[in-house]
Length: 183
Length: 189
View 1: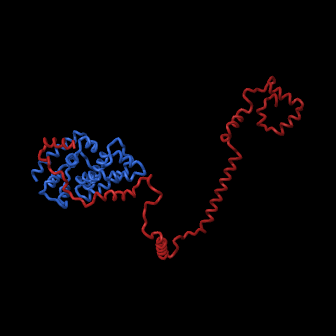
View 2: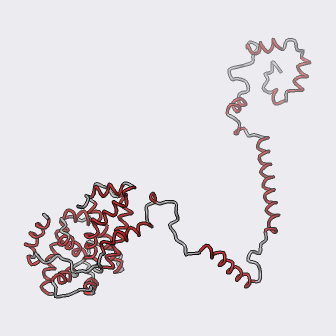
View 3: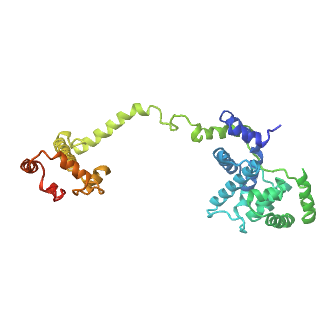
C-alpha cells in the first residue's frame, strides 16, 4: 500500500528521510504524471524529458510547497505547465494560452510516427481524433476521460473556472464523436 | 471510482459511443522504464541539491590529469609567444617602477603626518568637548556680577588686601594678556 501524501511530505521535510520521501513520491506519481505528459507531447523521448524536468522542479520546489494544497494537484499543475511550455517552445510560440483555439498541426504527424501506430485500431482512432482538438480542449478531455479527474480538481490544476472546463469538455466530446465517424 | 460514474453519465448525454471505448494507451514505452526512473532522477538531483544539503565539496569536475598537465601547457604557450615576439612577455621589470612607488608612499606619509599634526595643535572649537565650549562662552557664571556688594568681589578683595597696586600691575603685565583683561570689570582693572 502506498503511503499517503501527508506521510510523504513529512519524510521529505526531515533531512534524514528526505531522499526516502522523494523516492516514494516518484514511485507513487511517476505513472500518472508520465501518461498525462505523454498524452500531451505524444513521443516517449519528449515525455521522458518533460517528466525529468517536472521531477527536478518538484525536488527544488517541494520545500516551498504549502501543505494546505493538495500534492497531487500541485504535481499535475507542474506537469501540465511543463508539457504546455514544451509544446509552445516546439512550435516557437510565445507561450500557451488556455483561451486560444489553436490546433497544433504537428500532433497528428507525431502520432502517426509512433512505432505501433495502426489507424485501424480503435485506441489509435481515438488518439487521432483527440490530436485534432485545440490544445485547451485536448488537455481538458485527457484529464477528464483518461485521468477521471473531477472538474473541481481540474479547476485547481488549471486555475480555470469549472464552468469553462465543462464547456471545453463538452465541445471536445462532440468534436471527437464527429471525428471518429470520419476516421 | 465515483467520478467514473459521473463521467459515464455525462457521456451518455453527449456522445454515448465514447462510453466503453478502451481507455488503454496505445503508446509504447521502453521496458523497465518506470523501474529505473527514480534512480535516474536521483542521479540528476545529486548535482542540484539544495544549498542546505550541500557539503563543502566542489560540484565541478575537471578532466583527468588536468592540473598535472597545466603547467606544461602554459609553458608551451608562453614560450611560443616569446619566440614570436623575440622579447620576454613581461617587459616591465620590478626595478623600474619600484623607486616611483617608494617616493609616492613616502610623500603620502609626510602629507598625512603634517595633516595630523596641524589638526592636533589647533583643535577647532567644534571638535572640543561640549563642556569646554560652554566654559569658553561663559567664562564667568551668568548669575555672578562683580559689584562692590557682591560676595565674590568681597572675598577676592579680602584676599588681595596685602598686595600693593604696584605688585598687582606687575603681575598682570607679566601674566595676563590684553584680551583677557577685557573680561575684568573696571573696578578691578
